Length: 288
Length: 143
Image 1 (tube, chains in turn orange, blue):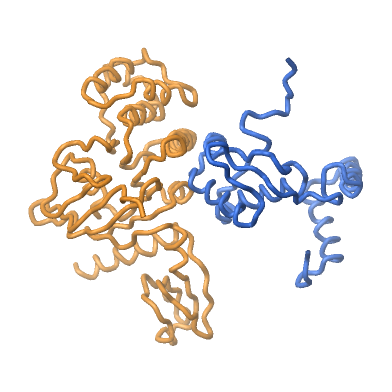
Image 2 (image 1 turned 60 degrees about the vertical axis):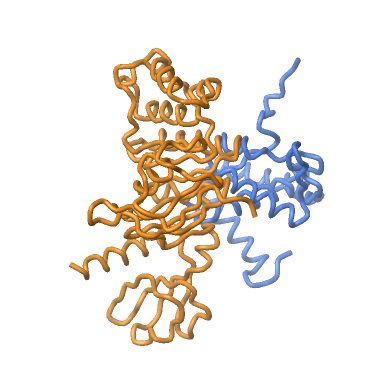
């Protein structure tokens, strides 16, 4: 078993009384494309910031390829924040120079290579004049110029049109194919994630609820449809449920064997995640 | 030098991924590779496209491509050679299914007549499925 790409032990981050992350312990395998999903405010961005070293944990630790992240950018990590800060009045060339000067490990050829992909980015264009897709391409080129082992992407696709989304994913997947980079990517666009991710990390209310290979996680779950007055026959953990007058539809973890009178189906990634998110929202509503 | 217009830098075949089919991507790749082998488009000694080539063409996760190739390897159809790529080791083509086969030619002639008669693709599919279900009833073993 190789060292995990990312390893968190008792990781917590509190902002005043708000527990953004609370006592999280998990490993993420190397070379995988990992979907980081969860409702708004679940702690996804906090987790990515902690992994990058931009913020420090309140308690616990996080390490990348065996070396702890200590309050500064870890050399093996590249992080693309949600707002993608790039100086709008600089040209692409000037931004590359500025960012290159700030990084110890820096590959100018790799940056050029990524900028030349797809339609290519004009180096003399001002950042503010670029399309959202081209701006994302520049931001990813800058991240990959660090030759990272772990690439952290916070909502990389959210403001992109379908073509730019496809092209952005293509750049990231090419990086995985070329260099075996581990990618941890948060997104609300579940359909995009299910196309490209092979590992799932589900964070709800500051805690890790699921962490595993997408196929394995899906295989552990069943969607059961059956008589509402016979739910006690169902084994396993009911994640979420919707109930009509006579019929119940349950998302269940570990429902084997399927009880007589019930029909079982395998969920897809999207319906699985939505089931967990709906359950979290209902719990939150019940507390209010 | 004459360049073969049919030659692709990416290798002899290209995978098409249907995102909305509900079929897992790696299974689609396995099916398409086998289909190409059955049709004689992929033969022993041919190299499958590298993960990088598939990613460039389709933006899928390279790990998914490798998973499909491992499945093909498990079935004894291909072999991964370190640093060189994944190669077809077995033939699934037979005289009845390859591109020059008489049955295929007859079907091509038939479909040419259908086009000539002004049938749309749905009509052709409906006819084909109807006849197939007469001859290969559902529930009977196929081989």
